[in-house]
Image (cartoon, rainbow, N blue to C red; front, side, top):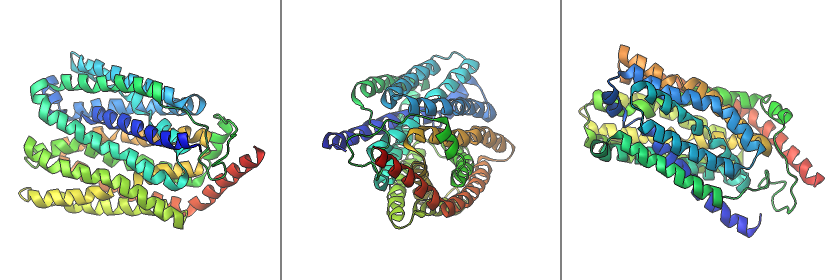
Length: 426
């Protein structure tokens, strides 16, 4: 890789971080704004769950299309398009006059929600395998920070500006970033950072081929990652969209108490992505199973700590906050390691497709999570909904990660052999 590209890759990481930061703020605003929106349209938890699930369903449908387009065409230009769509659909949500139209317009925001695989694919060609865990951890750090930004916007300004005005602000950020990405982010040859091709001047151009995508999904480790993804996102959707209301309704927190509790928790959670990525890189250098073993450990510890946290009495706010923050450190550890593992076993020209399939399967289940949690909350409590869904999903996910860790060395070796063969051909 040329020196100019080495410098530019950090710029691309920075722009990608900004895109995901503000996009997550926009996407996750629905959580802290839930009560305001419910009051505005006079709806209950089940109806609000339908709004959230609508966007997840649309995002799920569009994952395969985004994956194919990213592997077939120029990735930065497609990312700029996704940013523009984010801005426009958010504006439409802001002007929705009634609940029916709000459900439709908010669901349309799911179109750009499925655009992340191209970012991971592009950065995977800028950074070598030994750095990807850390890089993806830094990138995913933007998600909880975006959540925090959305929470601050909602708690500080929703009462003054109203939830519609906040959507205008975040939608405008999408349009601005679309312009910046279109004119500044550069495409690079697919696979240039792989060990077998690293440092080579001339790299053959490879585009999406169906046979390579079909070969990928035949790998047993990939199927176990699919299973983990299906169950693993249930907890994230439940916590993201219902935890604020749980604090308000069942723990009697006001806006100040929520902010004092959640700001440090989200900061710790964000650091968990970076810690998880760095631990995964460290373990990967010692054994090819390292990333997934780190991921499995984080998931299991998170499940244990959630049980402990939710049984803490309501009046013990300090202890609850400390326990919640400790749990938050572990629950994101799996994420950068799973994404890195997909890159470790997928050919460069089908990595966006591979991640899109992963996310398609994840969202196929996760789209039901807010609706299911809303139903359980109505019949029992939000505490029960959060606990039952999260713990069940994390235990099943840990078992899948353990199985994938057992199988992964062979699949990594197969990819390395394919890339070495390409290096010889060039």
